[in-house]
Figure 1 (cartoon, rainbow, N blue to C red):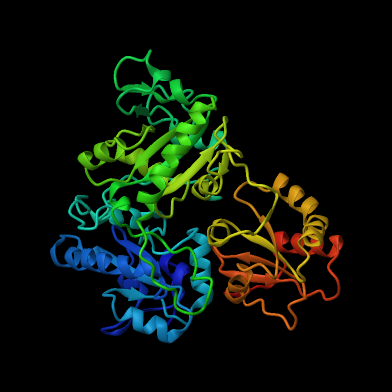
Figure 2: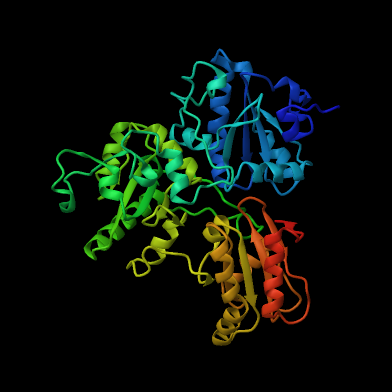
Amino acid sequence: MAVGDSALSALFGVDLLDKGDGSVKLESIEGAGKVVALYFSASWCGPCQNFTPKLAAMYDNFKATHANALDFDVVFVSSDRDEASFTGYYQKMPWLALPFSQRATKTVLSKKYKVQGIPSLVLLDAHTGEVINGDADSELMGNPTATDLDHAPTAAQLGPWGTDIATRDSDGVPMAAKDLRTALGTLEADSNSGGVLGGCRLELPSPLPPFRDSISGALVPACTVLEGKVKMIYFSALWGANGSNLRALSPPLSHAPAPQLSVPPPCKRFTPELAAMHTLLKAQGRSFETVFVSGDKTLEEFRGYLSEMPFLALPFEERAKKQQLNSLFKVNGIPSLVILDEMDNVITLNGRAAVSADPKGVNFPWHPAPLSRIDDDVSDIINDAPVVLLLLGGKDEVAGKAKAEMLLAEKAKAVRSRVPLPSLRFLWAMRSSEVVPSLIDFARLVTRSEEEDILAVLHVPEEQQVYRYSGGGELTTQSVSAFVDAYCAGTLSGVGL
């Protein structure tokens, strides 16, 4: 086939798979007024197994009933490890698929659309290739019956997802206050000093906290309560407290099937934890506010869930602003906690882990350390950003810490001072640590001897690649620095995870 110069041809480069006819030419799904959804998913992903049937039901209903049924298609982009897994999983789907053999294209698409977790659904204009909605799966997760997802009059206006387009900086998540204000500053006329939330009016819980008792009524300007303070933005929903579909950010840290555990839904566990932290920090006189951004389906659910919280809240009706915040911070599932400093610069996109690891709030507002030791499961960390990983042989913890600091501490400080967050994280551990074997297995970093030091970069969120140091000999400050510089310069060759 001679592939044309259209936007979709530039993206895919090949015909797509269709279970019925074998293959589908790209020109059949492209054109003005049409929408294509890229569905990033995998058979090993538990959340995907829950989400795929919901998406399939919505898709079948849309195709059967919508006036623009012919103007909407879904393309499965697989993160499966082998073709047999891909084929078996694809049999459960009613739409098109990128051939499994197109691994390079899959990697390019993941990076282009900044896919940091699956399932992920990205809506594209099938004529221009522009992103319509980069977080469409979150809307469907919050409305699993899809009862109000098809109210847009034309497919060009998102077809089944009738929300406004949320624009995003070309470099991804905007990190500086000026970028955030540019994105949200024109939403309302009084957005001169509200920072990331612009002119939003925040809804206070009832009864009003004492520090707000001079304010009359239930609504106050965001700038009044947020200016000059640390901000903790909490993305959550009642349906996430009663059982939710979250995203899997990587394969399990083992290539064996992950055990299925019966645990309380994440929002149900974390909301009381965050509320306790909020109360503790207020009692300590810390200058901050927590803002609840709801993914609830109804006003009644929102009101009921907010009654459990001592936080401020973005009013339920501000759905467009909620979607913009989701897109700005690339929220990949709930609960999610984003922490900003007094000038709206991002401190961490993974505030949930920071709060859970520090129940007394000693390290508030949880600026990431340049070099951290691995003491527990690192799934959240390696899924948040690329990681420089140093695993040291031997069992002498004191000597190991000194060696890690000698090899990595200065480099970590230097890199983090010049690369915007979220940038490289620098982690170290002793190979004798109980959490390390699963990490070695996941990243395929097995060595001949357990005494051997390992240096690598794991880039899970977008690339799903591991870059391993292969210089030979004893690691030195100079060799480690050169390896990190080569990774930052893009001159290393990685291996797929």
